[in-house]
Length: 375
Image (tube, rainbow, N blue to C red; front, side):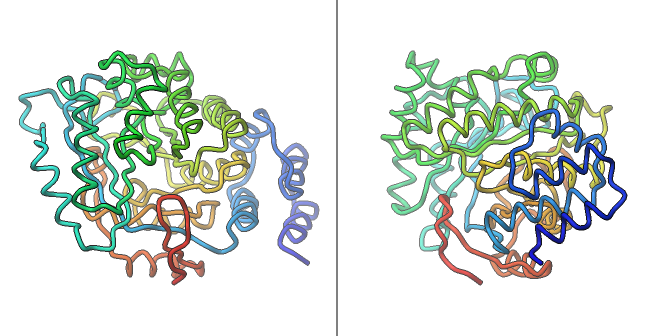
């Protein structure tokens, strides 16, 4: 009896509500579930059942593999023109907690990784009012001079919209210019939640949902792979989570340009929405599982260990996640400023041990999921 048949037997023999049972059978058969069925899973399905279903889907896509890479982050500035209510990172110029790294300071940080085995630099920061597309093109050129082979994964759609609008360029021309100067991959930040009414409440100044999607669609058409995220656990409903994923699934059907989906948990410290609180680990695992089940056309679901913490990351690998990001090397402040505590750097050996501790197979990858080494 294979794993899917075993799950079907449990579903059939167990005390599962009929509507959940019907959806679970569809999932085990490899069929796509609808938006309303995804909402039903959020509202009614038991966590154990979701875990079994999601892990089965994950195994069909990537067997027992869990991916990671050797990367580091550069955050040029946390000065930002936006005022997102959930953000603990943004500061204004002159604030004691603000930083505005010069080009030389950034390149000095990059130079520390020259000769290392790092394959990716992740460059994301605030939307600085005084830095334009030419500045960031020059930055990427200089990074490539220091480490020619490194992949530049950079700039959220929010940063990209600002810099190309400032330059008076179209989305296509702006992205092409960035690509010509070294941009190879775009991270998934800035998606937050696509529901327009809720977005207007929690991040009214930020890139609109349709623009975020258009930037990623255009990037895919230009041969630039991207990731996608959701910010969950604040004021959104289950239906709004599913609507968010639905828009991503439709775009992925069209372009096949997303590499991974990354659920990002809202963290409450030091921002304007602190009274909202944070959701439980149970809710985290439910979200990973349903994301894996619903986003059937996404190759990978990432449990970003810096955000979720190492213990939750290990659990997420049992609930559909098959990627944990990379070494990071204590080079990001986005989540520590929002109250996340614990380790902010991991060695390759530590990531390998984490994955093996849940009886899965560590696979070192590059940015584009080419397998470099099976540990």
